[in-house]
Image (cartoon, rainbow, N blue to C red; front, side, top):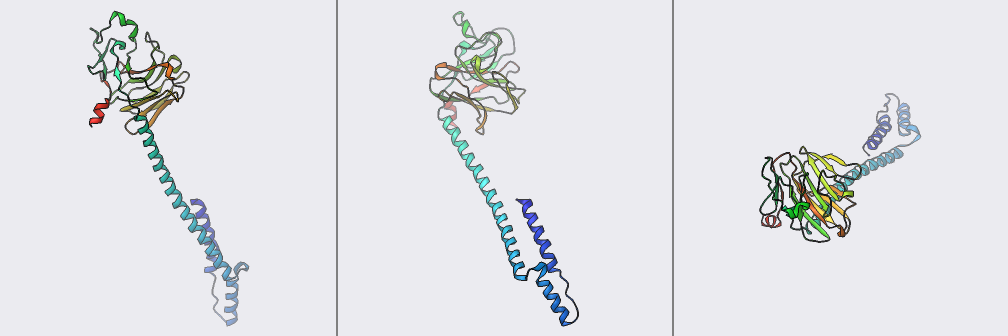
Length: 282
């Protein structure tokens, strides 16, 4: 619209400039009359027609300016409205928040689980295992990959948040209760894992069956939302409610998935499940 208005102004100037700059002859009354007639009938049009043209172009320019202002206002209003819907949507998901507790019986031996079951960290020093493994629970543990499962109630929708602030590497998501826990895991929906991870603080990966999804992002708090009815597993930036990634080929209610956590094994900084009670007290 901007270039069009400029072109209209240029054409208007070119049309009116000759009219306004027409020479006024010095001489006899006949010459003055002839000059006046030639000026008033420039290009075969009298002054009334030129005035109408001028008004028409003025209206066009005015309407163009009005349109630009209206367009900008509507665009800003629509963005604000989308922002409202965005926040409302996240509130709906948060209404399905569940209490998640780490299940020490599934943890890798070098993972340390807090007494309240909300914090997990990798212990760098080799030696005594951080998690005691009962001989009856050997099959439940992750033996090579540094993972631990969580426990939550059964519901058609579930939401929880995890703090990963200051973590260089981590993995979060959900997995089928029957998924493999031994050896090096192949993370993909086909193998029962709907998970995302960060390496080097910013290199994001969503682990897929074919090509993994990669991008750069910095996260401090992650919201995880499981919707069995829609068969979706969605991850949000819990700080600004923005979407991180959504698996649209998620599990059904019959799959019986469990939360999955890993602080990885590159640093000792923990990851924390944010307690519902702690957030309510703030």
